[in-house]
Image (cartoon, rainbow, N blue to C red; front, side, top):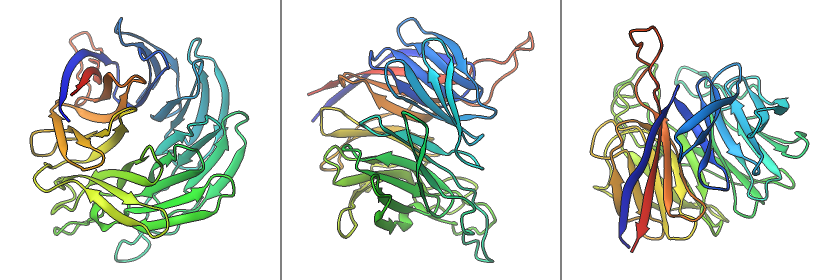
Length: 354
């Protein structure tokens, strides 16, 4: 398989983008930013503010052509009309931040994850959760359906393609999978590859599963984050993905191949809707790429991008011909008139596969 990847669109939003979701038309973007939820037109390169949380918007997902759900560091979920910006519903879900949020493929369920890492002992092992790490709600009514325990902080969540399972990964590299009907935990494992205090000991810690996706057949789960590092404050672990067979006895099936990685925290995964490939993106600490394409079945690296900014979300358009990348570039710079320069990045790439 060969890829030709070419940038077609590049523009900025006022503040850093932490998540985004394409509407069904493939040209309209709903973006979760540091200052609120925006709607953007990828062709016209225009945008306007739809809604705000009382803190950063950590996640936003399209529910249907007219509605999106956002989550924030205020622990709330908002149901938003993407045409008018009207807030249709607000649900207080967590006492702490919502780190990540996902909607099931049948559009019936929404899951949000939380947790504050607090040291539980002198070895800095995590203290027990103060509230359930995973909550599953009805998208139709906002009713809480399941409160599922996990070890904090829980940073990534995703549903299986058939919507029968939800999985979540935490800061310590532990993944748990539950049945969405019964709430029963059906699988769980810990991968030490994403967890490292580093050789240089300090109170600082950086690690864990930052993104999680079921494969299209539902039999495997992709994880993304950062591998072992010497200095957690430097964030110099390897750019890492892993693929796990999760049914029955969880087993590592594949991971970033030797020589295919640089250094940096990987924050997003996206699987192509028609072809045997996925993309992983995030921050660049060292090396020559912060987004790369891989063959899903073999794990071979196919192409790379060096964007010059932190990638927080990647998503293929429904027809698979384009790739959306969003994120944040540096910190806002104050201009001579006292206003801040835009630093949220939006890019759209054409994808040709041979």
